[in-house]
Image 1 (cartoon, rainbow, N blue to C red):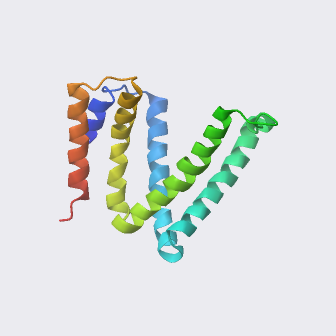
Image 2: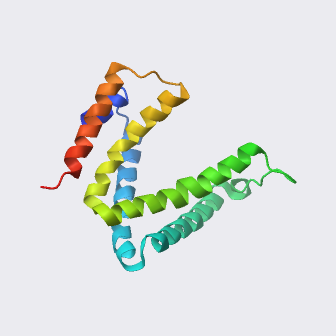
Image 3: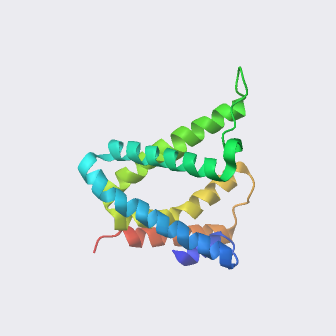
Amino acid sequence: MVLGVAILSGGGSWHGPGMVLSVLMLLGEVTFTVSGMGITARLGVVETCVLACTLAAVTGAVLGTAVGGPSAWPLPTWPLPTMTQVVALLVLGVLVTAVAFCGWYTCVSALGADRAGVLIGLMPLAGLVTSVLLGVQPLTALSTGGALLVGAGCAVGLRRT
């Protein structure tokens, strides 16, 4: 699967800050998933999602205010927000948080953290599909081969022995 991701991303390059941030992101994802397992088992998926969204909102508000000050809180134009602002609020507030949390914790609850974690490997594949559909990247034989390798890696990782 790692080889497939490397092919999909064009091989990439290795830089210190990027690697540090990647490792921190991985640790955050693992912590997020493992800490949610017990809560999901006790409370249920929807309740866990409400808790996760609340914690994310509070943490984001505190960090945003600490780092950005008042400029961290831009208000929509008044009396009517622009369509871009409405779409951004709906996508970020509904899809990226609530729907994503519910989908993830449902997956973790059904598959277990180990098998659900394998599905993170599909993110570069989703990026490729989105880029091709938006017309910003052509679908090449190399990217198709990388996608097939990622899919095969996920299939192997999800298999029960």
